[in-house]
Length: 220
Image (cartoon, rainbow, N blue to C red):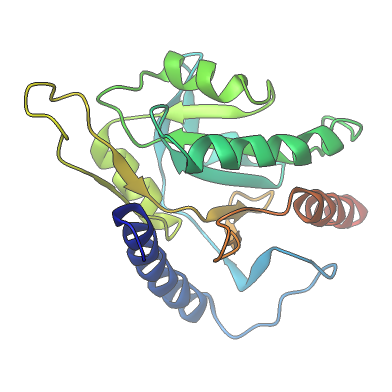
Protein backbone atom coordinates (compact mmCIF):
# COMPACT_ATOMS: atom_id res chain seq x y z
CA UNK A 1 0.00 0.00 0.00
CA UNK A 2 1.22 3.49 -0.82
CA UNK A 3 1.79 5.81 2.12
CA UNK A 4 1.21 9.56 1.99
CA UNK A 5 4.82 10.38 1.14
CA UNK A 6 4.89 7.91 -1.74
CA UNK A 7 1.64 9.26 -3.16
CA UNK A 8 2.89 12.83 -2.98
CA UNK A 9 6.16 11.87 -4.67
CA UNK A 10 4.20 10.19 -7.45
CA UNK A 11 1.99 13.26 -7.83
CA UNK A 12 4.97 15.61 -7.94
CA UNK A 13 6.69 13.33 -10.43
CA UNK A 14 3.61 13.47 -12.65
CA UNK A 15 3.54 17.26 -12.53
CA UNK A 16 7.25 17.45 -13.24
CA UNK A 17 6.88 14.98 -16.09
CA UNK A 18 4.24 17.22 -17.62
CA UNK A 19 6.51 20.24 -17.30
CA UNK A 20 9.40 18.24 -18.72
CA UNK A 21 7.32 17.11 -21.69
CA UNK A 22 6.27 20.68 -22.33
CA UNK A 23 9.86 21.79 -22.15
CA UNK A 24 10.86 19.17 -24.72
CA UNK A 25 8.16 20.39 -27.08
CA UNK A 26 9.17 24.00 -26.52
CA UNK A 27 12.84 23.25 -27.05
CA UNK A 28 12.33 22.17 -30.66
CA UNK A 29 12.80 19.11 -32.86
CA UNK A 30 16.60 19.09 -33.21
CA UNK A 31 18.45 15.87 -32.33
CA UNK A 32 20.89 16.25 -29.40
CA UNK A 33 24.53 15.76 -30.25
CA UNK A 34 27.24 14.52 -27.93
CA UNK A 35 28.35 11.33 -26.21
CA UNK A 36 26.09 8.38 -25.49
CA UNK A 37 24.72 8.69 -21.96
CA UNK A 38 23.54 6.11 -19.43
CA UNK A 39 21.26 8.05 -17.08
CA UNK A 40 20.97 11.66 -18.29
CA UNK A 41 17.91 12.25 -20.47
CA UNK A 42 18.90 15.15 -22.68
CA UNK A 43 16.60 17.73 -24.21
CA UNK A 44 16.51 17.83 -27.99
CA UNK A 45 17.69 21.45 -27.69
CA UNK A 46 18.92 23.10 -24.47
CA UNK A 47 16.47 25.65 -23.06
CA UNK A 48 17.50 29.12 -21.92
CA UNK A 49 16.55 29.86 -18.32
CA UNK A 50 14.90 33.14 -17.34
CA UNK A 51 17.08 35.40 -15.17
CA UNK A 52 17.23 34.35 -11.52
CA UNK A 53 19.02 35.46 -8.39
CA UNK A 54 19.38 33.33 -5.28
CA UNK A 55 21.74 33.70 -2.29
CA UNK A 56 24.70 31.38 -1.77
CA UNK A 57 25.82 30.22 1.65
CA UNK A 58 28.66 32.77 1.57
CA UNK A 59 26.20 35.61 1.00
CA UNK A 60 27.10 36.07 -2.66
CA UNK A 61 24.43 36.16 -5.36
CA UNK A 62 23.83 33.05 -7.45
CA UNK A 63 22.70 34.00 -10.96
CA UNK A 64 22.64 32.52 -14.45
CA UNK A 65 26.19 33.79 -14.97
CA UNK A 66 27.36 31.98 -11.83
CA UNK A 67 26.55 28.61 -13.38
CA UNK A 68 28.29 29.09 -16.72
CA UNK A 69 31.43 27.19 -17.60
CA UNK A 70 30.53 23.81 -16.06
CA UNK A 71 28.00 21.03 -16.39
CA UNK A 72 25.79 21.32 -13.30
CA UNK A 73 23.33 19.03 -11.53
CA UNK A 74 20.58 20.91 -9.66
CA UNK A 75 18.68 19.32 -6.79
CA UNK A 76 16.03 21.07 -4.69
CA UNK A 77 15.18 20.08 -1.11
CA UNK A 78 15.46 21.27 2.50
CA UNK A 79 17.67 20.61 5.50
CA UNK A 80 14.90 19.02 7.61
CA UNK A 81 14.20 16.48 4.86
CA UNK A 82 14.04 13.01 6.44
CA UNK A 83 14.82 10.78 3.49
CA UNK A 84 15.04 11.92 -0.14
CA UNK A 85 17.51 14.78 0.42
CA UNK A 86 20.13 12.97 2.51
CA UNK A 87 19.86 9.89 0.31
CA UNK A 88 20.24 11.89 -2.90
CA UNK A 89 23.13 14.02 -1.63
CA UNK A 90 24.91 10.92 -0.29
CA UNK A 91 24.59 9.25 -3.68
CA UNK A 92 25.75 12.39 -5.50
CA UNK A 93 28.78 12.49 -3.18
CA UNK A 94 29.89 9.17 -4.68
CA UNK A 95 29.77 10.71 -8.16
CA UNK A 96 31.52 13.88 -6.97
CA UNK A 97 34.39 11.83 -5.55
CA UNK A 98 34.97 10.39 -9.02
CA UNK A 99 35.15 13.93 -10.43
CA UNK A 100 37.80 15.13 -7.98
CA UNK A 101 40.63 14.05 -10.31
CA UNK A 102 39.27 16.22 -13.14
CA UNK A 103 40.67 19.73 -13.71
CA UNK A 104 38.79 22.27 -11.61
CA UNK A 105 38.07 24.34 -14.71
CA UNK A 106 35.97 21.57 -16.26
CA UNK A 107 34.80 19.61 -13.19
CA UNK A 108 31.02 19.01 -13.05
CA UNK A 109 29.21 20.68 -10.17
CA UNK A 110 26.28 19.93 -7.89
CA UNK A 111 23.94 22.72 -6.80
CA UNK A 112 21.66 22.14 -3.81
CA UNK A 113 18.87 24.70 -3.43
CA UNK A 114 16.79 24.78 -0.26
CA UNK A 115 13.12 25.49 -0.96
CA UNK A 116 12.40 26.06 2.74
CA UNK A 117 13.48 29.69 3.26
CA UNK A 118 11.45 29.95 6.47
CA UNK A 119 13.86 27.64 8.31
CA UNK A 120 16.90 27.35 6.04
CA UNK A 121 19.18 30.36 5.97
CA UNK A 122 21.89 30.42 3.27
CA UNK A 123 24.51 29.58 5.91
CA UNK A 124 22.53 26.62 7.27
CA UNK A 125 21.90 25.38 3.73
CA UNK A 126 25.63 25.48 3.08
CA UNK A 127 26.55 23.61 6.26
CA UNK A 128 24.02 20.91 5.39
CA UNK A 129 25.19 20.48 1.78
CA UNK A 130 28.90 20.62 2.61
CA UNK A 131 28.49 17.83 5.17
CA UNK A 132 28.03 15.55 2.15
CA UNK A 133 30.68 17.08 -0.14
CA UNK A 134 32.59 20.34 0.23
CA UNK A 135 32.36 21.15 -3.49
CA UNK A 136 28.56 21.30 -3.49
CA UNK A 137 27.18 24.75 -4.23
CA UNK A 138 24.43 25.69 -1.77
CA UNK A 139 21.82 28.42 -2.10
CA UNK A 140 18.32 29.50 -1.17
CA UNK A 141 16.28 32.69 -1.54
CA UNK A 142 12.94 34.37 -1.15
CA UNK A 143 9.95 32.11 -1.78
CA UNK A 144 8.74 33.75 -5.04
CA UNK A 145 12.26 33.55 -6.47
CA UNK A 146 12.54 29.91 -5.46
CA UNK A 147 9.20 29.13 -7.07
CA UNK A 148 10.23 30.78 -10.32
CA UNK A 149 13.62 29.06 -10.29
CA UNK A 150 12.12 25.61 -9.68
CA UNK A 151 9.44 26.13 -12.30
CA UNK A 152 12.03 27.10 -14.91
CA UNK A 153 13.72 23.73 -14.28
CA UNK A 154 10.46 21.75 -14.49
CA UNK A 155 10.73 21.03 -10.75
CA UNK A 156 8.01 21.53 -8.14
CA UNK A 157 7.72 21.82 -4.37
CA UNK A 158 4.91 22.35 -1.86
CA UNK A 159 4.94 23.18 1.85
CA UNK A 160 2.72 20.94 3.97
CA UNK A 161 0.73 22.04 7.05
CA UNK A 162 2.41 21.52 10.44
CA UNK A 163 1.79 18.15 12.03
CA UNK A 164 1.27 19.83 15.41
CA UNK A 165 -0.52 23.18 15.67
CA UNK A 166 1.38 23.91 18.88
CA UNK A 167 4.64 23.75 16.91
CA UNK A 168 4.13 25.64 13.62
CA UNK A 169 7.75 25.10 12.61
CA UNK A 170 7.26 21.33 12.47
CA UNK A 171 6.23 20.96 8.85
CA UNK A 172 7.52 19.20 5.76
CA UNK A 173 8.13 20.32 2.19
CA UNK A 174 7.26 17.90 -0.58
CA UNK A 175 9.48 18.35 -3.63
CA UNK A 176 10.65 16.80 -6.87
CA UNK A 177 13.20 14.03 -6.57
CA UNK A 178 14.45 14.59 -10.12
CA UNK A 179 17.65 16.48 -10.87
CA UNK A 180 17.93 19.16 -13.54
CA UNK A 181 20.95 19.10 -15.83
CA UNK A 182 22.46 22.43 -16.89
CA UNK A 183 25.04 22.75 -19.65
CA UNK A 184 28.08 25.09 -19.50
CA UNK A 185 25.95 27.89 -20.94
CA UNK A 186 23.62 27.56 -17.92
CA UNK A 187 20.82 26.25 -20.10
CA UNK A 188 18.58 23.38 -19.06
CA UNK A 189 19.89 20.49 -21.10
CA UNK A 190 18.14 17.51 -19.56
CA UNK A 191 17.08 15.66 -16.43
CA UNK A 192 17.96 12.67 -14.28
CA UNK A 193 15.06 10.71 -12.80
CA UNK A 194 15.58 8.41 -9.79
CA UNK A 195 14.65 4.77 -10.17
CA UNK A 196 10.83 4.67 -9.86
CA UNK A 197 10.88 1.63 -7.59
CA UNK A 198 13.73 2.43 -5.20
CA UNK A 199 13.76 6.25 -5.63
CA UNK A 200 17.56 5.95 -5.81
CA UNK A 201 20.15 7.23 -8.26
CA UNK A 202 23.04 5.45 -9.98
CA UNK A 203 26.17 7.35 -8.87
CA UNK A 204 28.61 5.49 -11.13
CA UNK A 205 26.46 6.12 -14.19
CA UNK A 206 26.05 9.79 -13.24
CA UNK A 207 29.80 10.10 -12.80
CA UNK A 208 30.51 8.53 -16.20
CA UNK A 209 27.86 10.63 -17.95
CA UNK A 210 29.20 13.92 -16.62
CA UNK A 211 32.81 12.99 -17.28
CA UNK A 212 31.82 12.22 -20.87
CA UNK A 213 29.88 15.48 -21.19
CA UNK A 214 32.74 17.52 -19.73
CA UNK A 215 35.33 15.87 -21.97
CA UNK A 216 33.10 16.38 -25.00
CA UNK A 217 32.70 20.06 -24.15
CA UNK A 218 36.44 20.50 -23.66
CA UNK A 219 37.15 18.92 -27.04
CA UNK A 220 34.96 21.42 -28.90
